[in-house]
Length: 105
Image (cartoon, rainbow, N blue to C red; front, top):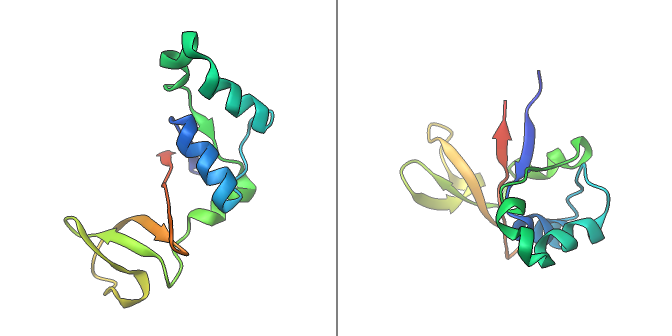
């Protein structure tokens, strides 16, 4: 069974769609914006899983120039970090904030 990536925060999902071209298994951008703007359902909507489409999962692979978090909270450029350290997430890519999705096994 393959990994499934998802966001529970629609604001992060929208940001990643706008800045990095992430696509979702979701109707369309208007549907995502509707989740953000609907105050009466906001509490439930922030717990909804917004699944990343399979075609966009490659965006979350590390690149040489990514600023990443590794070890116990250290930060460095991916290309310069020894492979013996456990890299946990991408923080910045191309000078922009980067949000990592959660993973469902």
